[in-house]
Image (cartoon, rainbow, N blue to C red; front, side, top):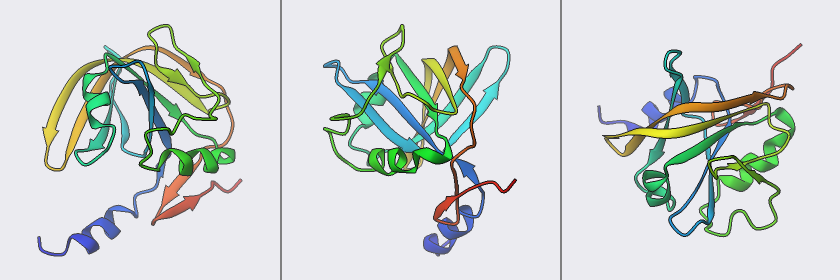
Length: 157
């Protein structure tokens, strides 16, 4: 395959939800990153996965985290998605959050949230796959924020 730009464009035509994956780094500082590479793996045990680019400024924090949270965004949280898509180590400045029992940052008013214990990392190409076992979850409700063809989208009624 020699046309990566067209390949990426083609991949972008798979509509996804938008999440903010959070953890704390080795110094106890909260980290957050916008991700649409979230998927269920197993119901028994309850396992989820997401992918992080090896070029991410937060890579070490996520590979070293014992726990993380996947915060599924509502359509009203487009600005939150854009905020956490930045490569900024002070990204949590001014952002409201609470901590899970295991210490992962939880964002308020999300569609759903999954609190996970990290179980595996897999080195795959230019990304790592991070798998976690769900220890707690909450469904708050609302309409999802979607991403399709390089832009945000919404479900029609």
